[in-house]
Length: 127
Image (tube, rainbow, N blue to C red; front, top):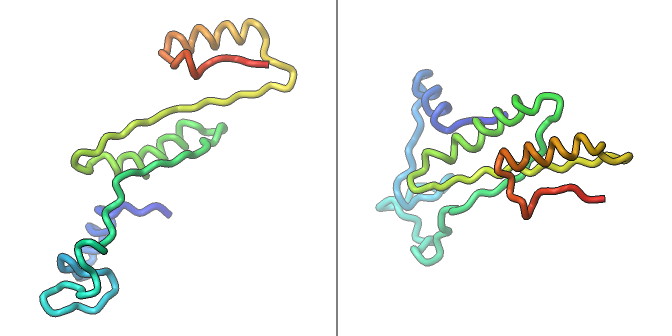
């Protein structure tokens, strides 16, 4: 199941469930400390926030648009609102044919790839 934080917070609010907000400097699940700080965590030992996300996923070829849409909404749209975030999506295609691809197919795919501005150094056919 995929959960969006904003949607979950809204649902909890709509249902009237009080959601405690952690005080700055506190650790999730730890008892509150006087002044709201955990004495075991110093600025130098506190872990930093993750700064990079990366992932690779294989799309369902029976319904690739639906699969791509789900990935886009569940991951990309959650990362995009972060201030200063720069996202880059790369589509990688691999195709293999045990008997090889026909000359006509090769020509059409090459022309289409060129028209769609595929990177020439990382696009092509091989035996």
